[in-house]
Length: 237
Image: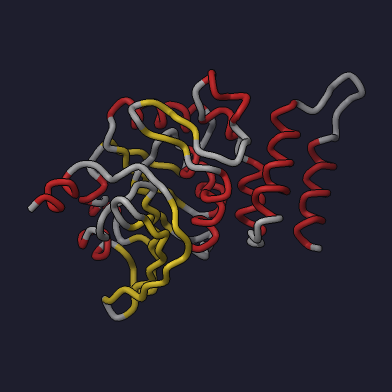
């Protein structure tokens, strides 16, 4: 009931326009996306729902895919990378059980959509992208859109961001065969880490750090692009 009230109130605020103005198709599509793909599939965290309603996903995909921006599947963003389907973004975000004072590390910036969602919920987002062109475009996009609490770095996510550590939560949006030890070390005690773990077969897996060990919970099978960089060398050793 609370969730449906949230959607209703959001619609009222969005529709506070003059008679000559109309609601864009993107706004309608985004509301439908949240209702059909997010709420009706079990997402209940109101901060996640609000973020998914607020962020304009069509601005994070190439122009040729803009009409499909609110569909329930991933889309290409160039450099053999994708933007995750909306439900998976919402699910991974909700599983982290975020607080407004949290500092979050993201591995795999892509176009910046997941970072933008996180920025609505937490204090600071640190996001690393290994592909220079994607890192640059995401940084420019997020800056132009006013996301002042998102910090973008081009680098290898295997190494994390030690100078900004520790982090209350880490989200990995590419698939490693195992969780890099350096990321575990940069996670606070009680911190949460969500990752699509595996090579050919991937399992969305949630970890919680307790007494320097990780408590593991498997969530659901998923399909992500593989993690690149040093992790590939480690896997071939």
